[in-house]
Amino acid sequence: MKVLVTCPPMLRAIEQLRHYFEDKGLELVTPNVVQVLTEDELIELVPTVDAWIIGDDPATEKVFTAGKNGKLIAAVKWGVGVDNVDFKACEKLGIPIANTPRMFGNEVADMALAYFTGLARESYKVDREVRAGNWIKPAGMSISGKTVALVGLGDIGLATAKRLKAFDVTINAYDPFTKLTAAEAGVDTILPFPENLAAADFVVITCALTPSSYHLINEKSIQLMKDGVIIINVSRGGLIDETALIAALESGKVKSAGLDVFEVEPLPADSPLRQFEQCIFGTHNGSNTKEAVIRASLRAIEILFGYLNIK
Image (tube, rainbow, N blue to C red; front, side, top):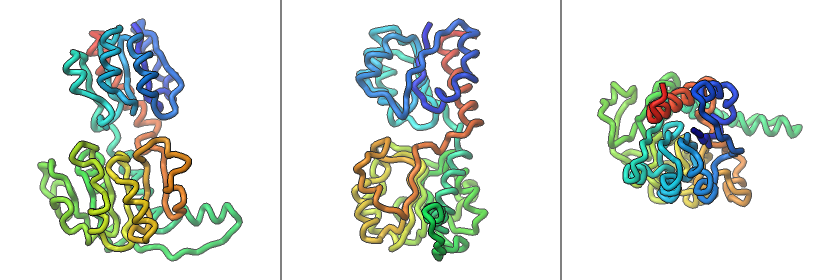
């Protein structure tokens, strides 16, 4: 049996994980993946394997149909986000599939806080200027006493709230699906979005991308924010309308942004976002620590072996 792995973090750690497959007589298929494979590449490759550990690839109905018409028996989505995977297609085709939730809350929250402090004190800008031979001293923003709009109270949101509280900020949280009280979530209040968004000095996005949250941060919601707001997104690029964000950065409505994710990844070379030196950009890498990658990979392997009846 062959197992395809297309998740870049897992692929980079594959030598530590290879023996789990070889001990069970499984052959690993490990293509070179920088971010994702294309739908056409997957349609050609997936039918040749029995199982698939998915990254952020376009795991569409076409891909799963091709797989079902070939050898594919089961799949696992590595990580938390599932917006790129057509679970309904899998159900229709009889392909068992699951993701690996609650694996990266702490790690992604750590990254959110890196953007949070970096943008407040402009430490990234200082680093760039020092490397260029300059010696700048920008006046940053004091964090204590500020207000954070935290969008999403899942695993990542709760871990982020826990960390933010140490900075002596007010946290207004937004999550229509949470069953927690504000006290249980460790925030000051839970509001319907976008109520009181104007109070926020920072907007930190940690929610899942769903049809209802697509472009949640758009021209209308940005206009409700205070002038000079800082926006941070460590979840999914599609939560922000980048055209609206670009316009807000140009006007100064949004002071700066920390974006670990984008609508198109990798960020296109001609993206207007690249012109804003006050922003910090990542490579959809918030969950990527050595410890977390092994933890999530072992969970994905465990689920997959269960589907394949391998003990």
